[in-house]
Length: 168
Image (cartoon, rainbow, N blue to C red; front, side, top):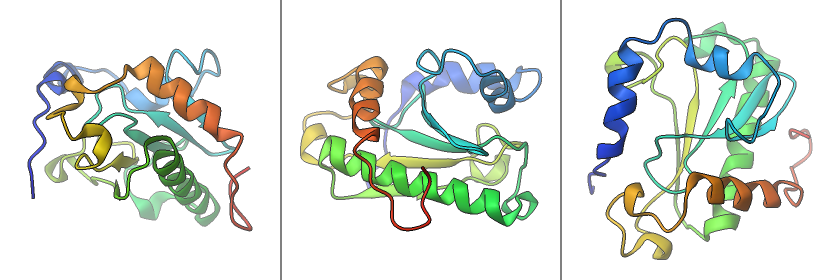
């Protein structure tokens, strides 16, 4: 497996140590300028947003509105809605970037690598060996900005067709 080198994430890692409160609760609580926060979609209990310190272009996160550090703290309905947003994110990445491989995962706890260990969230990441990134070693070398990724993915949201029972 190839290791992704992500030096631009250092700023986040260092600042996260001193952050007072919960980053996700602060980002999600006030409904406001979702585009400025790179929030692509809000459902009743969760949202789908771009990671501002991405591993690859289009790196998404599905984040519950509920402050929970574990899957077991989530009511079933909210858990299912969160997973539906992961599925939506996979569809968006495949459609927007033509990638064949997508990683979906959650790091539960600081020792597991969670940058915000107290608030459960899933990463939805297009894997970088795809043609779009064949000449890029890191997201810092990526062919588009966060704003461009946001516009690209946001335009596709209206086309996203969910399976029966999916997020609307």
